[in-house]
Length: 150
Image (tube, rainbow, N blue to C red; front, side, top):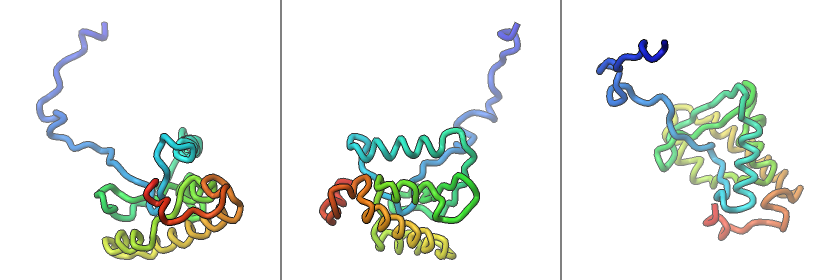
């Protein structure tokens, strides 16, 4: 049977010789609350519902401050307004990163125009969420001191 077809893996194909394909990444310019908060868990559920079992397109911009790839995810090849990043922000489950973060990431890029476009689209989405009082905006404006909670 099948057990007789097994043989040891060739040493040239060992896990120490082939680098991993998957890399850790973060959603560009998008800050969410930790999973132990209501908004953090809701953000994780929204991410799962929008991404699980679908064809996704990732746009990798550059490494962020932690060295992880900063990216945006689109469910269809489309514009920045249709990204998962914008979906989280417009639902009030994430906030847009500060302008210093945009500058930091764009300084590592050859052409930062796509990152600047994403930042503009996310800022519009955040204003929509703030005016609609959804998610973390339901009790009003969030001050800068709340950034430590992100």
